Image 1 (cartoon, rainbow, N blue to C red):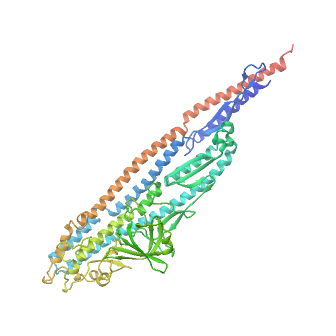
Image 2: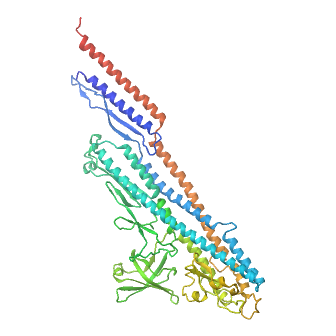
Image 3: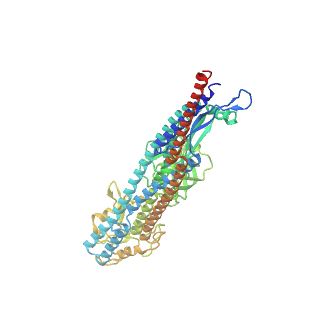
Length: 617
């Protein structure tokens, strides 16, 4: 024990030096993103009994750990708020793009184009026999149809871009998962002796920060050693007994579990034959679903989903819950391995002939879909074996996902509804319910052209780039359901010969008769044409809805930015490096070091006197 003083002073020297090293590390990383302040945890070493057996004598100090200052509560709060911010940042940007597409009010927006159409109609009212005014009406009609064509094409391009962004985000999730998995292995290996891999833990937390912007996350670090859990090993000296597993969940499902990481996969929406299928009739082909690597679905329709991924999915697939729904009326086995389902009360009938239908949560491919106008029912064929796997009874069926947001499919559907309703009103003088519109006289079909003929459609649709003529269009049972904003067109007969524009009614003299074209002109002010009122009101309601949604997204994004920044500031206040504080620590530990060194010098002098000088005469 003779040299105990040396050992005690030396331990203080090493303790101060370690604390200075930690302080230096903090100062060096003061501006490192994601870095958490570290501290050297020190304690007194075990004392020794005195020679007399009375009392204990101290043996100095030691650093028993270097820990980071971090609040898991604030981390969790940040990840939650960051996920919400990611969602609304995407929606703000995408809705702004759609707003600019509708471009209202402007010289090239719908209101100006629609007004020009009716000015051209008025020109024919006053000059029914004028080829010039009829040509002007045709051109105004072409401009109107091209407005809808262009708007729909741009919306579909946006949907394609959103699909690509979803692909990118899924790939980012997989990359982050692999990085977290790798860090878990490094951290676990480094901490086996009870040390703390602080810098690696910071790197892992930073990856979770990135992940939380993309998708909603849940993080937990679980102790797996039962002896530690039971409290058998609870002191700092037993840190090497701890076996913690780090787990990350996204949308409630495990992405990373300690050394294991699963992946998400992008699966094209196809049937077993490789044919593209659509969840919404308005969708483009080639959209992706997301599945786990084991084949299980990643529920993209889950309302609890968050982050940028949620924003992109809502914008790509959002149909305001207006996917196809119907009631199962009957099922008939054909005896050839298929079952024919009859579905009543269909929410919509503009469906593809093949796709995937959902019954009691079970997805089954269907084909040969047909609609019966007389009974308002849909029939379709499915595989009998797959149908037998469905839990019975089945009362309701649906196609696609009910996404409670107004995204691309919703706005395309609204445009489709306009062109179908307006085309039917002009062509046949019927409203959206199929009822005759007062004073429309059976529409353009019943009007008389310059040659004294009737039976011509004014509006139709294009197929393979060519507009339908009256015979082709009339032969289509669901002709108006086949009209979309993208293929909306004047009828071929009108495009090729403006004399086929009907202006007169039966019994009116030609060429100056204008009875029908007067009715066409009055259609603009018909308040019963749409639920929203007039045609102008309907289109303005779309722009208003879009404006409200965009304003809401802007407001939420701004609010969420402030909330997220506030939480981040709280995290920084706890975990960040304060240079002034570190300078104080540096001086404090420097003085500790100097004092310990001075103590060694003093002890050296004492032992020099004791050993070399005592007893010397």
